[in-house]
Length: 340
Image (cartoon, rainbow, N blue to C red):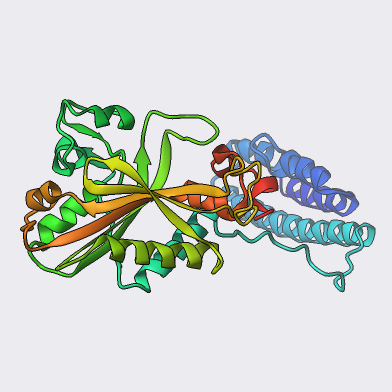
């Protein structure tokens, strides 16, 4: 049995030396060192040995196993290095070539325009305030002078998650919440950006869109103050040559109310296809805060006045970049986004 163990060691080493790849090495390992290998077969015959021979043969078998395992590991490293050298000789790498550029993300057009709008109004002393997107019927409608039977609710068809809980249709509820928390402190000047939801979906409307509303409350605030602020906004956003005009309109939470137009950004007010030949483009709605809204929010309407305005972020972005379909802003198509 001693001779057999030594013979196994010699044969295994010869086979390992002749192996040309890692697959062959594994086959040799299984043949000599596996559970059914040559070495295991010899050890199973140790039962026929005398008590004096077993320790010596067992020690020799362990020595042969350790020797073969070390030899196998060394040959494995040799063949791995050989394969690596052969692969490198075939695959030439020119380390002097410039690396492939990584694509860097850019700010989305909506995010960029929102930042510009916030910069304009914070420069005028406004603070940026946020609020919940899931609102109560009270803050979204009733506190804004829109009772349950008011026809103005039809213009803001929204998604209800309960009888009194809904996805907000505008960011005006933030104005009420802020006034409630601040009353009767003045001056109060905020803008409220955020996502809003309505049941609309076409080239110029989306069921989810972004709105930025503004509010100012103080002593003796007039409609002239509102016109001055929005004139500065229009000129800062669209250029110093931009003209503004105010048309009478109606909103339940402001009185008087107006729609604000700017001279067409495409033709400069001369008349073109974009402005339907009028030379004007509608950009936002505004007005003096309704006395009832002031009272509901904790302000004395005999002592304080204010103004409010609201604009669609997508509308401003489309005018700024000449985009004709709102849905392009939400499709995440790089062919479109990389143009801006």
